Length: 341
Ligand code: PHE
Image (spheres, rainbow, N blue to C red):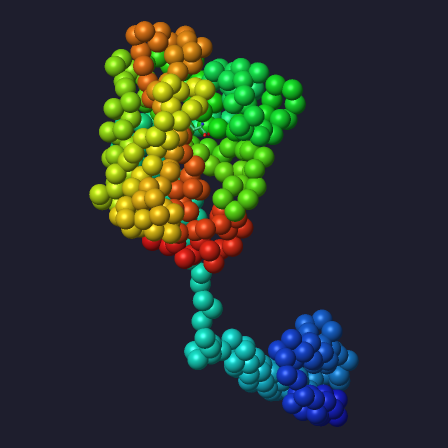
């Protein structure tokens, strides 16, 4: 018996130093201390075969071996655990000298900023927002706007037709008809949205954004339009900016005007931006043509109105000194970041 005990003892001592993981140590421990199959447990079970008179001494020795093994494994287990923890902590060390990853904050696109600004200005004047749809029928985009099929004005706008009768709207003016069909005066709406034209150069894009305004009530005249535009121009381009109306032509307004603002760059003296004229064209407008009111079931002898339409990109380009419309559509975040408020 003593021999067996010595053998187990030396077997344990021989290997116990070689483990570097608590898992491996645990497996090794099981070889000796497993309740069923551990070598020490089996010794205990073998006691019954020991002659009766030797049994107490053998039992004592086995117990001593067991206690010795238990405390030895405990001591090694604690040591390995400590090493494992130190290793883990060393692996997770924070290098406080490492440069931080730079966070890049987003910025609103200049077009969005101008659009928001326009919406703020006009809603403060009591305009309600109406968003129409980008796909329109020929009727809403042209016919109802006093632009019949054979009207030369249809050639003024190169249209993307989707199928006979359906098109991508070329102007937010289509929204005027929807609003006037559904509601009765007083009407005061602002209709922002994308429009599409087959047009592509440094200042034109096949898709761009417009902002349409429509006011219909009793006694509305061109004076109301100009008064409102004066307020708008100072708000968007700065104090002291004046407006000027020039005669123009749109089938859906009569009279029609082109609206210029005095150059906010040179104060009207003449510079590169205003091409030496002192004035910059910003939008088209006019008194709603009586045929358009009639088309929507509004009595033109009782009600009158004015409408205006402006290109959002054009305003953004003027305001921020952008000379090519393409950069507004390139989705380069570095571009938008330059205009952060
Ligand atoms: N729809 C016109 C355009 O796209 C602008 C406009 C709107 C003119 C309303 C007069 C009245 O050019």
